[in-house]
Length: 584
Image 1 (cartoon, rainbow, N blue to C red):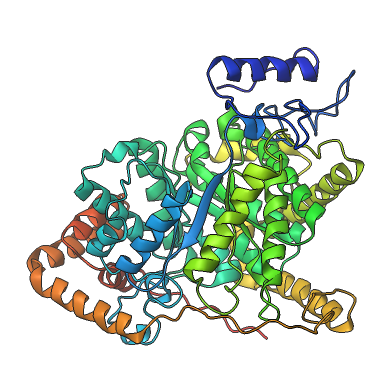
Image 2: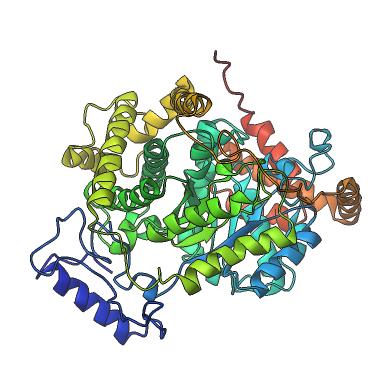
C-alpha cells in the first residue's frame, strides 16, 4: 500500500478509508454504543476545515491518530502477557492458561543464564536457573516450551537480545519439528542490542559483531519469513532504568533509525524490511504524558522513514508497538495498589493506540506472578476492552488542547536529542534538514564505511563515551530527589503509608528446578551425535570469521542439538567478549 496523496478534506479521506475497510470485512460486528445506549461515531474531528497535517486523521500520514482508519473497531489490541519461569514444562502450562483465558499471543521471559548465552550447567548460572524466566538450553527445551501450541497459528514474542539469534534458530527448529510451514510464522524477536549497551547490559560481544548478526537475521527473515519481525526496538528498559518519557522516546527511535541504516547498508529495500521493525514501550503513570509520547512516536517515525530513509509505502512508515505497564512503578508497600497503577497505565497505552499490551501483575515487585495475580493482570486488559467503551472510537483524545500540546512538546524534546546524537556521529546536518539527511542516506546505501551513517555512528559514540547512561542517571537522580523531598508522591511509600494489608503469598521457584534442568541437559548431551555438533559449530565459526550469513550454519548446529552456551561460547572464541569501560 503506497502512501495516499492528500486529496479532498481530511474527513472525506478518512471516510473513504473507513468505507474501504468495511467493504473488506475489517470492521468488527459489535455494539458501538455507550453504557447508556447512545451511538458513537468511529472518529471525531473538526466539522469543517482541516486539522493540521501533524495531527491528521486515523490511518493517514503522519499517523499521529493511529495507523488504521477503523481504530480498535477494526481489530482490538493483542493481549500478549509476558511469562516464563522455572523449566519449559512449567512455563508451557502457564502459556496454555493464558491462551485458554483469552490471551491473544505469547511473550517469552527467559532466565538470566539464557539471556547471557550460558547453559544451565555453567558455573556462572548457579542459583539463577529458572528464577527470572524460563531456562532454555537447546531446541529440545524450545519444543517442550511450545508443546501442543501450534506455532504456525500463534504469534510469539521473545524478549532476548544478546543471544537472540541462537534463540530464534531454536524457535525455528521447534516449529519445524511441529511440522509448521516456516514461511508462515509470525512473531517478534527483540534482538535490540543498542538498548543493552544503553540500559539493560545483557550483551555478549562488542557492538559490531552483534550488528552483523542482526543484519544477517534481517536478510534471512526478509527473504524467507516475511511476516516475522526480527527486531523489537525497546524503550521499555531505557525507561525502567530511569529515563524521562522524552528520553525513552528519542533514544528508542534513534536506535530504530540505526537499524534502518543497518538494513540499508546491506542493500535491503526499506519498503521490504521496515515493516519487520516493531517497537516496545513502557507505559508509566503520568497518564497524559504517556498518551502524548505514543502519538509523537508514530509521527516522528513516519516522517523520518518517508523523508530521510525514502520509505514509500504506508506499512514501511508505520510504527507498530507493544506496550508493557511500568514495572518500576510497582511498590512492595501496599502491593494491592499496583492493580490500580497497572490499570491506569494500560488505559494510557490503549488511548495512545498500542498494537499489543502486557499488564504487570501486582506481586511482580516481590517475585514472579502467581496464577491468581497473573489472571488479575489479564482480566485488567479484558475489562478495559469489554466494558469501558475505549475500543469504540479511534484516538478519542485527538484534538484535546492539552494532549496535542504535550505531543508537540515531547516531539520537540526528541528532536533536540536526535541533533545531539547526529553531532556525536560527526554530522553537520541536523534533524530539521531532512533533505540533507536524505542525501547522506542515498549516498550511503549498500555501504558499510565507518562514518557513512551518522545516527549509527552517534549511537556507537554515545555508548563508548557513556553519554546515554549519564543522561539516564541524571534523570533518575532528579526524580529520586523529588521523591525524597516529597515533591513527587507515591501512595504507600511517602504518602498514605498506613495500611491494613497482609503479606502476599508469592511464587517461589524450587532449587530442584535447576537440578532437574542440569540433569536433563546432561542426558541430552550424552544422547546426541557429538561429531555432528562439533562439525556444525566448526562450520559456523568459519562463517563467522568471514562475511557469510550465519543463520543457516547456526540452524544446522541447533538441529544437531548444540546448546545455547556452546553456540555462544564458540562465537566468543571468534569475536571475543565486551566489557564496559569503568566510569566514575
